[in-house]
Length: 226
Image 1: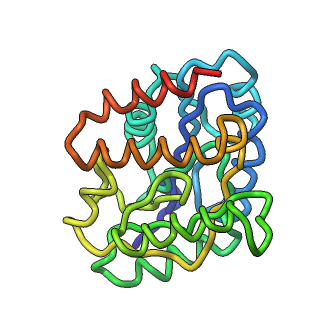
Image 2 (image 1 turned 135 degrees about the horizontal axis):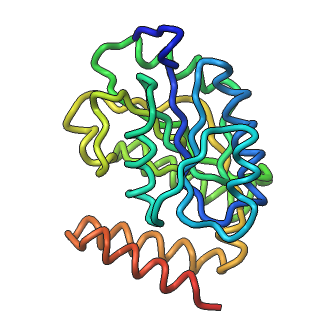
Image 3 (image 1 turned 45 degrees about the vertical axis):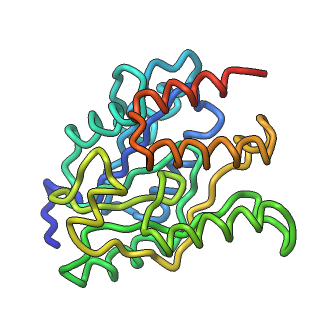
């Protein structure tokens, strides 16, 4: 990897939509973990709250139409870093993330990877959230797949919108021994087991060849229901 004063080593890209309660802590976490070796880019899909104004104090803000895939692609197009870090707005990076990514990329065969999954607050030793963490991390180790909850990183040359699948064909997908921690809000607002079941159904649909656009519409429809 190379770095010049004009080209940050890392570009952190965070798609947002009405994330005023989460965006500042997420950006501070990214800055603390990656330091001045990163540019922070927030790609907003039309927030009606203070997301954009809060983010502008800490990051570059791009406005575009909603849709996580489209927002990520727009952020990548505007970024300048050699290593892209794709992050959810409610996910906080482990302080050791930068050194872990740098260590993984020493191996020229590595084109990307992710942190382990965790929730915040950190769950007790026993309970459903600890079970959720174990299940997601087992899936990650077995199938080398991840989501933005796990701070996916990828070299610019290997980037593809269908990230988790394409990376496996491009080179080594490294699993870091760091933990990216995501808010519990998703599971607490919609019901823990209902949310877990929905995510597994969406993954099964994707594996069966259902269009990501159809899956996204389905997820949005279910998420809007009370």
